[in-house]
Amino acid sequence: MSSVVVSGLSELSLAELPMESWMSQLPCALWDTPLYHLAIPGSHNAITYCLDMNDRSPVDLMQPDLLQKLDKFMKPLIRPFVYKWAITQEFTIKQQLDCGVRYCDLRIAHRPNDSSTDLYFYHGVYTTLTVETVLMEIREWLDAHPKEVVILSFSHFLGLSQELHMLLLTTIRNTFTSKLCPKTEPLTLRNLWALGYQVIVSYEHTISSLHSELWPHIPYWWANKCKAESLIEEFEHRKQHGRPGGFFVTGINLTEDLKYICTHPTESLKDLVMSTYPTLLSWVKEQTPGSRVGSLNIIAGDFITESDFVPTVVTLNEKLLKWSS
Image (cartoon, rainbow, N blue to C red; front, side, top):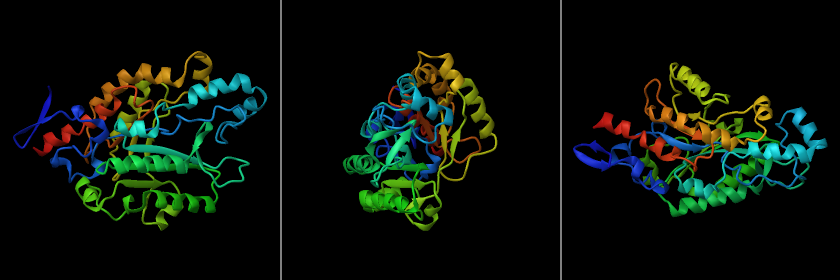
């Protein structure tokens, strides 16, 4: 059994912690480390497990004009491709949290021609579950795990008026109430536990500056590559220029283009991701959290429950223990 030594005491490897409660079971030597200096596993496009497979549901308006036209006139041919490449997670939000995910990439939309104020998630098409439903599921999970902290990144807003932004903010407040961490607080586990804060909300919109519980948008390093080697090369280049000061995400999610999809007609995004995970996780194991140049913080991926992604990221925090011992 592998172990790390802290102040003369042998501890279990962090990979052997129960992932559903890994934060609450971190060694006390890490309780005063800011969360933006820890290695934290994240879920890219976290709510794509419930995309609307009804062909009457439109493709989202961020898709290229060509795809929207093809979808309109050749739907039976086009839709199967859309679904195969739009799904990035297959497990529910509670299952992802149980697996140890603590950062969720949430992309918010109001459906076109919808007279209600309901909001959904989207990626290629819209979800069947509303934002309110998913946030309540997160709240229920947090109630059962009072020492776990989640970072919810609201971004890529599509079709939201100022009124809908305010309704979303009200939903966030009403759902998480006293669990919402204001942006004046020191972000250490010891401090968050003492005050009962479990939710950090980042919000990619100018209104974040007007509200104490909305943290600014968290930078997301996106390589826009469909090959693992190219993605790694891009991130190694970025690392040389130093890390942002607060939270930031390194997205090891691969990006397919139309050429790739057309030349791999029988494949899906999952096929691409699972074939490259061994290479990507080998690279992740070499990374280090912390404040130094070249260190990483949140690492997000696709199909994060299907591999050793989460324990691999959590285990990186052992490197911080070795420095402090």
